[in-house]
Image 1 (cartoon, rainbow, N blue to C red):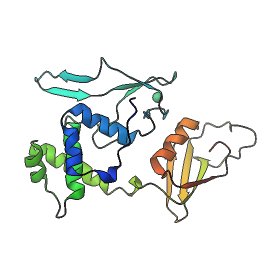
Image 2 (cartoon, rainbow, N blue to C red; image 1 turned 90 degrees about the horizontal axis):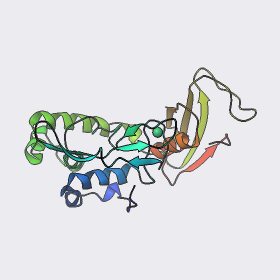
Image 3 (cartoon, helix red, strand yellow; image 1 turned 135 degrees about the vertical axis):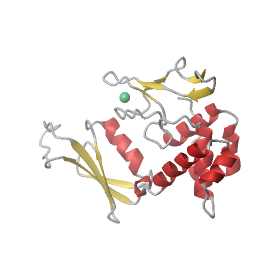
Image 4 (tube, rainbow, N blue to C red; image 1 turned 30 degrees about the horizontal axis):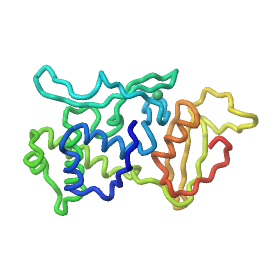
Amino acid sequence: MPKAKPVDPLELTTSSIAKFFSTEEDAWLMVERLRWPTGTVCPHCGVIGNATYLTPKSGYRTTRAGNTSYRRVWQCRERECGQQFSVLVNTVMEDTKIPVSKWLLAMHMLSAGKNGVSAHELHRTLGITYKSAWFMAHRIRYAMAEPARVLLGGVVEADETYVGGRIKRAHGTPKSNKTPVVTLVSRDGEARSQVMHAVTGANIGRVLTEHVAPSATLMTDEASL
Ligand SMILES: [Zn+2]
């Protein structure tokens, strides 16, 4: 993906967001920079920075109804994965026909609004149907109320366990068909657990990227973490 200066979400203002409104492409690129500061993250296998941008299958296209839609699609290059994905997977913007640029402004309006923003205001300001505005407001408020969105900071302990019981690692990778789970605990007692399909460096990196602040000090008792 193109190298670009990371965008600090705290510096977003209505005018800085509006700069990205000239095209849907710019809005998508902004979300990619925010979500993937160190490269694409495959939502299927977790590998970072190993995907091909599918030029022919993305970009602007005309729908049957005659509307123009835009999306950026990537394909994972991991041999055993090969899945296609976009930056919207696992976000509130996934599987909707609402343009990303409108999502970004709605998020800003809902988070910056001093007196609360109604679905009617979104409907009028963004030029979308009331039904779409209500749906966006509902999804965004729900996501904003989710405490797991805050990164763990300070001293964070990472621990690898297996569902059904802990396995002592004697030599190398433990042989088990149990589901591996990585648990992160901060010194103030907040804990996060995440299931992984396979304990690989890429998967662990993804969990850390999603949950731990870059400034945190990571403590582990496993050589692989
Ligand atoms: Zn993949």
